[in-house]
Each structure stands twice: as structure tokens, then as C-alpha cells.
Length: 362
Image (tube, rainbow, N blue to C red; front, top):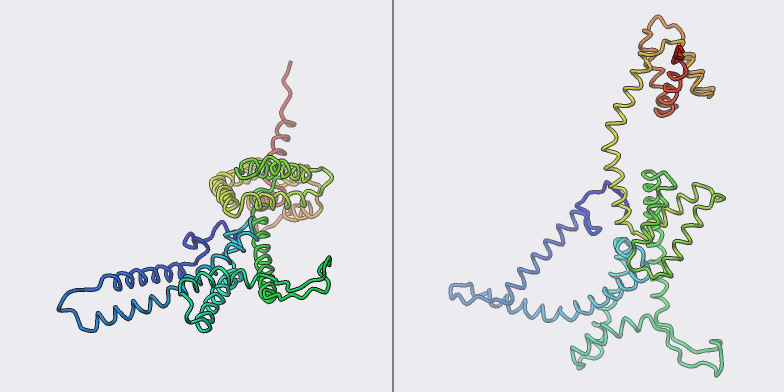
């Protein structure tokens, strides 16, 4: 669901193979429509061609009612999914179990039309399509109460629940879709935390995401802002606050908005990466040129009190006949850059140069 580096060919949640297949089916359908509706009058045409056209036209007339009923079943299933997963409707429809639910609804509607035509062959075909396409969808989702005690609360009632089996299957699909979306939500939250580690920055993004929504009523907007304010309570753990705000950004902005944020952050990192690399190399060169090995050890002692870092630097600074002093200093400089960080090293260099600056003679 959320991958800022995903292939652009996976548009609308479809792979490249699926897009090619859909394009091929559309081309075949267009060809058949033209072939059926525009018969040729050329006397040199093969004698079998008009016969084939008539047979295809009859087949199409027979299949159209089933296509209409199946399409209505798909529409109802899609409406149920989008109303259930209002925050992630497109992501929900892209899951495997959503496609299974839609397919089952389509097959059930088609089978219902087949049974209707077998049991009521004299019924008007248009009425058959309407009654199955609309009535069947409501029938399998309805509980019929045949009798109930007067003034009762549902105890002792006699009912026929035709939708019980469908309800169980629907609950299974909803649970599996939610589990798949939960995995995608967690992935999106991790990406947001990686690219926006600052709590203040996450708060600013979440605040803007809420106020930029055009469909929120003033009451809903105020409630969401109040919920956001609770998350930045100093008493709350910072990691919990960061994860909760990242999830709030996803729920209010949607996966597409999060992908936009991640693309922006990745672009900024790519622009800043060469500058950081040049700055790091300059720091290593500055440490090697400015300090001797003993001075570099003293510099490390002033920089940090971490025992493991100090031990490594002391061992690396010991005289080694197989290494030059410059290579030893470069190894220590790279180690400090990795363990301590460029900012801390630069601050210590600045502080040391200020401390060693000779006082002016008055």
C-alpha cells in the first residue's frame, strides 16, 4: 500500500500484467461490438460471415441480462466495502479479500438469475433482471421475522435469516481486509517516522492535514485538533506520541497524501546528501591536518566520556610500525565521525579553537 519507491506502472493498484490484460479485453470487446453491429454488405464476403454475426448477436442478447445482474452485484459489494473502510476505500478495494467478496456477489447474482429463469420461464425478461438485480441483493442481507410475542424483546420470535451465511462470509472478508490494511498502515507509519523523526515536524504536518480537509465540519475539526493536542502532552512517552501522530496523518490525509510527503522527504534527502558527504570529508581532513595522534586522543577525551569509544581510540593511537601516522589519524577521524557525529565534532573543534586563541595584549 505504502511504498514511496513503488513502480509507477502499478497504477490504481494493478500490476503491469493486469493492465495489459484489461487493455486486451477492452480491445477485444470493442472489436466484437463493431463486428456485430456493422455487418458487411459486400457481395464478395464469405457466406459464413453473416451467420457468425447473427450467432454472436444472439449470444450477446442472451448474456446481457447476466452481465447487468452481475454488475449490480459488484456495485453493491463495492458500496459496502467503501462504506466500511471510509478512510482507505481505494486501498481496501485493492486487497485480495475485497476482490473475492466482489466476485462472490457477482456469481451469486448470476446464479440467482439462472434459478429465476428456470423456475419462472414465462416471467418478463426485464422484470426478471430488475427483481434479481435489486431484490436478490436485499434478500440475502435481510432477516425475516415471521412471528414474535406481543410486547416481546425478540425472545421466542420465529424468523428466517437468509443472510446469516452471507453475514459470516462478509465478516471474514472484513476481518482479513482490515488485517491487510493494518499491515500497510504500520508500514506507512514506519516510513513517516523514518523521514520525519522530529515530534514538532510531525505535529505541524498533522495540524495542517486536519485544517486543510474540506469535508470536515467545524465540530469534527475541533475534535481532531483536541485529540492532536492530547498527544503532545509532556507526560506521554515521546515514541508513543510520534507513532500516534504519524497514524493520525495517515488516517486524515490518506495513503496518497502520505506518499506525497515521503516523496518530498526523499527528494530533499537526495539534494542534501552530496552536501553532507562533502562536509564529512572536510571534517576528516581537518582532524588529520590539525591534530597529532596524542592531540587527537586528548580531543576525543574532551569530546566524549564513552568508555568503548575512548578504548578504541587509545588502541588505534598506539605506535604501529605497519601504519603511517596519517592513516592512523584518518581511521580515528572516521571512527569519531561515525560514533559521535559531525555536529558534535564541529562544535568541539570550534570550542577548542576559541579556547586556544591567544588573548589580545592591551
